[in-house]
Image (tube, rainbow, N blue to C red; front, side, top):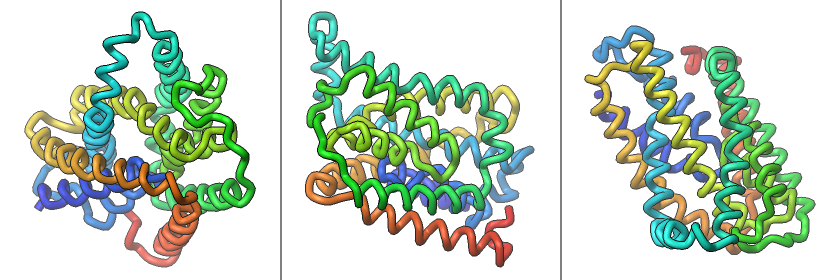
Length: 280
């Protein structure tokens, strides 16, 4: 049964990681609904195991980005030593990654112990949805339409915006996309930059959290096949969702995601306040 749950959660991760609707928030709520992990796994700390699983399967999404942009990445590797635009782009990705890396490392325990709750997720989804609607209602005229045209200052500002996504329910892609739109990127460029930014952000977070969980005994080596199944499913579904989102934002706004966030967030808040469904 746990492998079935791992597949289901992998699908949730793949669908939500790159859409601006919070993969962590959806995984947190889905895990509570499924009562994952079950007693059969005999894990010492179910909450720590669940939190680590939801972070680990993000590696599938990272691999999906690498595979999706493999041609561009190989081209960048071949010319980065001499191409100033490519050098500036990856320096920008690094600058955008650092704020979340530093603050996430310093506040890791506080975030996991205090903020990883369905109520926080519901509230963050609603607030984020309202922000999306406000941004789309008063759009700025974009002046950046290519990834290589993003300045280091703009990349850093996007990275600062992404820090807010340390709150479960905010959405990493959502925070970076909103930040990008506010500083003048068009929707396709903002979306693509959030994809590239996922490589260091999710990659380092995943590896760090897994190593720490193994050291602390929250996850044992016998559980790794379960994690692997979730990651593989996440990879396939994330690839498909990336391709769809890039096509969608080329001709549509993000309003639909704003409305979705508000509705789902309101449902989660109601379940927390008036039922015991999400009490775990």
